[in-house]
Image (cartoon, rainbow, N blue to C red; front, side, top):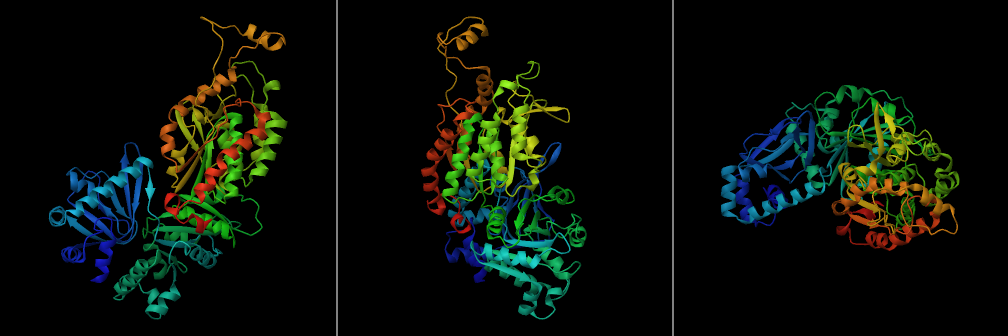
Length: 613
């Protein structure tokens, strides 16, 4: 048919072939239909075919010894799967399962060989596809195609499902044609009562065909089910690429009947996200942990009822178009991040996910708390300058650390108070290093205050943070600019800000096997003595923490979409009193680069950013 010819011509495998070739291929196609939750191929099997997905959604998973399966990717309509094994003859490298009901076309090894013999261009297309996928996997350990079908499920009995559906459809419409499918629409188009016909009814193929037609015509389809149990609600779940649990933030966290009965019924294995709808005047969410504790969701969103900005933020994250800001550590030099935030504000670049290491983690936390650059500057003046992290009053017998950390803790407490990370408007993370287990940790939930202390706890200078018997210290030891963490969160475009100094800590002194601190102390106290140029213990410890991250920064730079290095070499790591100058340098160094990037053609940055800003 003309529809299948048009579809084949749009696929990455067959794009560019002429119509006679496509018609010849279509005549030989073998169709495969699978229900949601079935396995298409298993890891370790011999690859005897490749498939092109007509409609539905597939999930690729790989086994990990002693761990849960790792989700490698999700596949949408028009994409191929199984091509590597059919080319190499090696066993399948991953397992592929259906997330929802799927229709595929199958190319056996013999059929594929015949296709390549007749149309050599197909091999070039397949080789290009494999190379692109490999490049993407090198750049990102996990990537996903955007969901085409989104199903809203009530997470509370009073969930504003219809309001959210309409708002979601209107916002998705800025990115492409979007259809809101509900029971009444199906009945209007196919006949009264058709939506509630069960899947074993003789009219089922007509319903499935009509829904597939709508999904083919529209970039996004948003399904709104009715109450559970019902045939229409079950059908919605079987169509889901992604499920959004929608609930009122002020409702009890208990599961709705729809959640408890329907989502465990095996009708879908689609990834599920929680959307908590707040009243318009809400200043900061609370109690999110209770709602998350009862549900298995991949992430959550906070949305104020009727807020266009919040809905655009949700849509960017939902479709893989989110913008992430990741900030490096660097002591007082990290205050330059505030200036970069100011430049982002002036260019109206929306930030959907924010994270960082050490001082970068603290500035990122301030952003996630809802502070703008001016408020960050005021808070930093009150905290880092006036309250001070200057060590004069915090020295302690150097058994565990040089300082007891009391002043630093007071500053962090002033910033974070009792906020839980789950209650932040913006998705946030910071990283720390587990000294006990020699591994990096990513903090995406729990007390913000505690993890800010951990991410910035310079070992030897501040005491480590004890957690269940383990000791956590500054994240910069293992991950100075955690762009890899940002990419694993599914962020579409990453802005990385680096305030490290490539060459630091030089000296004009020469000494042999030992160095006494007494002459150095006298030289500092004596106004007439020559002041030798040599770093103090704080500078040495800080450099030791960051040197591994600086060594690996070249590879990190390649993994971000916009890399900004702020020239703050003239400032010391503890130069908190230079707050205003450091912030201004951050702003001036980033302003033109960000403005030029934001104004560049969409293909050079994030698709559709201007329409969703």
